[in-house]
Image (cartoon, rainbow, N blue to C red; front, side):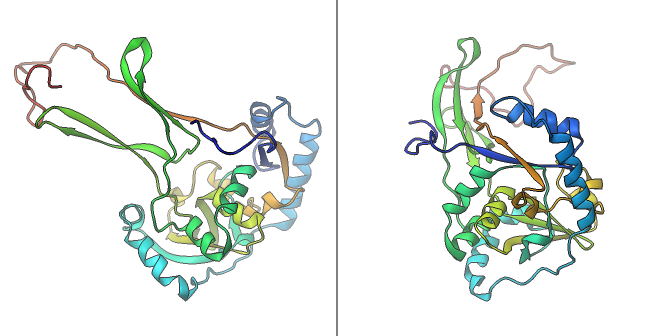
Length: 305
């Protein structure tokens, strides 16, 4: 069964939005040409981008609104979130706290979104409790992965998997030498905790853009998140340059809700492939290395690897 099985996408055009007047016109044109179903950017793109940039300039900086403490009723859920090993690895050494922030004050970290995907994510998490689970998951999310053992390039034994989820990664490798030599790879879904970075008075969304936008599209006014305080601009997300994120008129997450600020295009779904293929090679050894380094697998029974 392949990705998307059980759901009919034929009647659901995949739609994206690209913010106008944020990136250079040539970059926007190239993006829309590469992504759009007809391979063309709108004929009036330059005029619309100029108008959007002027509109954003008149609006100026985002409002300086302080983040609010989460609902006390969320306490047990947030305790489970904070206890997750993945959460501790991501935020254990940072200055963070759980909070809610108004969508209208949050700077967007990127100029494009997959609106259809954002709607799907939000629709699968109805109500306030669903929004909390979506933004701050307390349990591991379902891993959707298809494929399996097969052949790699040149008939080399290997395994190929594919998924629609860009948050699936090879997370670790483990070597076991007893009773047989085994190499095991772990493929996991990275936990996505919606994170907002606060640098001075500026609130910038660092990750979880589609989750956040999905909630905004269904009318939510505040975003549950991990709020991270920082003094280092390098902690900001990297898709848009810092001069844009910290500028006088940055793009806001709510710009994706205003037709003045964006252009729609047909979004091409992405498939992520993970291929595990062994590679054999021979190389001259420098110096006198007659014995393998300590910590290696060492000699093993014939045919056991």
